[in-house]
Image (cartoon, rainbow, N blue to C red; front, top):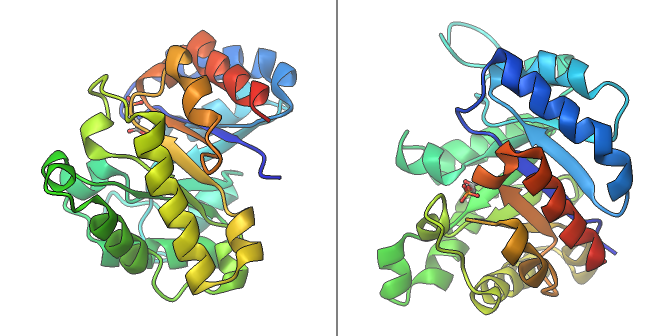
Length: 254
Ligand code: PGA
């Protein structure tokens, strides 16, 4: 049984005060959602204050990005070891905004994934097709190639610590959610790739999240799909009530 992972990607939102307040509001009620694993990914500058606001509550701490080098002259960047040193346990890698706004390639995502795993930080590796790719019937091909490229050379042992997030680019921040059938089709195909590359047992244990306009009112239907094991939530993760309502929807489907 895969425990659903409900992850909030706060992106470049909140400020010092509101980040701590949002984390506190989530932490205060986290005990009600033991059937799901909760994770918040604030802007990196607020990671430590969010960690402190979470305190002993069952809410994980994740970063939104990192650089693959361990240290050195890389102005503005953050390493995997820096993240683990402040008790972050996850890092989102290859988010569509990193790929499309900042030009990250599968090769970049792969280097980061290897570095994160080397530092015992669990990567949430994002894949997703553009609208024109879906309309051209190329979704499966694009997702397969991102899977191959971003996860190249990852051993079965390491893959057990990887979370995959399918986020159709056309559904992110647009209010246009993939239908449960559209999402499940891609998730099932990703699971099959895991079986083909590794084995059925490992494939069954890897969580594949859906992301793209997940809201309290569409979460239950998406999360009830056989191969959807949680959600990566942008907009709706900025309100504690909405984020927790999605966690509630995931608990109901376990
Ligand atoms: P959204 O973002 O929920 O605002 O669509 C999802 C994401 O980018 O992870």
